[in-house]
Length: 135
Image (tube, rainbow, N blue to C red; front, side, top):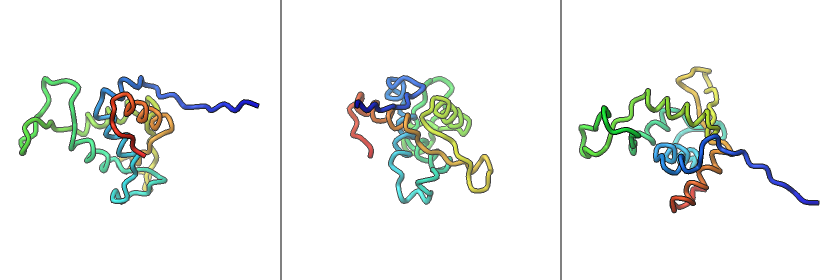
């Protein structure tokens, strides 16, 4: 008897995930589950942890009207909370990540975790772009 594997397909093209460094950074952070994150890896990672990971290497999709950092590297851009919310909403709607209620049921304390479709999209995007795989 032939066994068939069923994969959840991402709701966004893998080429889009591979081209958007912000998506990759968030997916890689969730896939790594670093112990230093001070989060429960089974439940998910906090929005603030993900924001810090994404903000450090934020790459805006548009170039006009985007604030630049006043710090050491003028090529870096500032990631606003609104923009970050839109990135998370897009990734959630595409089925790449899921939002889980935090321990206090407070929206600000929501936790996020990568879905099976998100893992598949991350692996395919890494293969397509030649980046090393995150396990």
